[in-house]
Image (cartoon, rainbow, N blue to C red; front, top):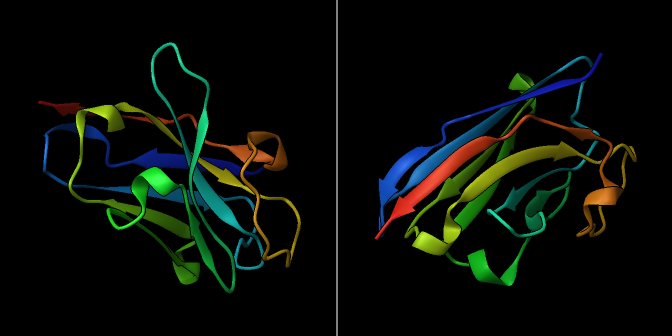
Length: 125
């Protein structure tokens, strides 16, 4: 059974940083793309970043501030978030694209097959 567990969220002041982690279990994920989405109160869930075996993709609103990375040996994906803004406040979710070896883009949440429970990130002004 596939499980994704996010951690690293919390309360931070604007301009600060956080590092989110997503530990995956149930299979080896090195051949699968992984991503981060977020959902703010009253808004739809939106794409943040994606990492494949070859490339990384980012939403325009996080380019230059967030970095996605992965450690395949640990079956873990990370999201380093710098220069945080109050509008980054949301629940952040980790997701896995179930298409093995697919390294293209995927910005819709219905393109992902497995999801974590989310971790809250709150940025105060």
